[in-house]
Image 1 (cartoon, rainbow, N blue to C red):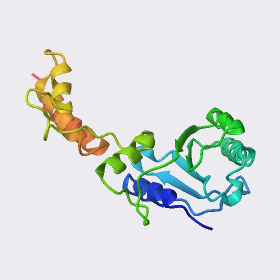
Image 2: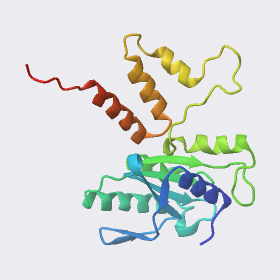
Image 3: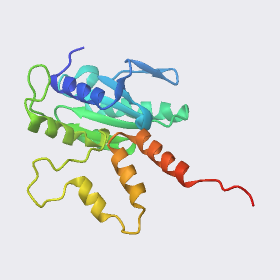
Image 4: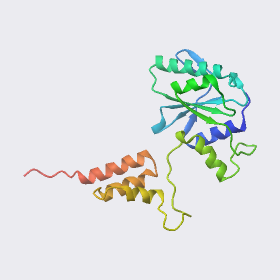
Length: 207
């Protein structure tokens, strides 16, 4: 199987974002399914199943909209039969496909990644190219809030804006702890909430 530089860039970025490869072909309900690549999320995204369709090389009939649609719909039915809770995302990498591909939105999210500024190894050529690639797959990436480094004087950064938008009646310790923990992920937020609740729930001895 050939692999375009765009697909290599997508797979590298999704690996960095916490997705693991699913060996292909893979089997669901006794049926084998072949795609250019398949990935599964971790932790909070453990139910995300991402299918990469390389429309540039055309492997597995990936230049044929009808072939792509039939394969994805068959996988969706197989997942339903097994009562799977996976959420499908189909990433079309390369030239846009028209026609039947529109029907894919009935079974999952569809992301079109037509181009990116990449070197021969499939790496973004600069920060702007990396940001442009991220923008095309933003739904699959962890939420990050920009800092105020280099921002014009007097302009609030994202975190400061969030603090400013909160109600003055909100517990300051709670909001500050949770917002600070959010940069470290869902587990850190849960831990911060647990610590605050543990300190607040002090059992008083019976009289």
